[in-house]
Length: 110
Image (tube, rainbow, N blue to C red):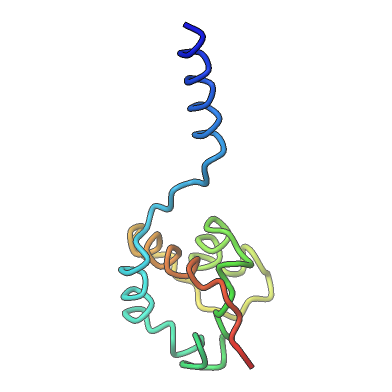
């Protein structure tokens, strides 16, 4: 009985402390990045436009919920934002895109 209690407690703690699973697929998110022409304004590893700024390191700076809100309605997060809103992006594409952006943890080397 004692073993069952200890095992149950260990499982509960492990589940409670585990990071949340991402809803999206980063590989599909890279395709969504391309399909939505994000690189016209944004750079990753020096490739892409300069108007929207680089996305290198964004995965270390922002969380998934912030990114989702920002992509759908940038001005709701930052009133002075110049990025185009994507209110009609499909939920799956948004989840995938955010999963991809969250993989961009490193700043570009200068």
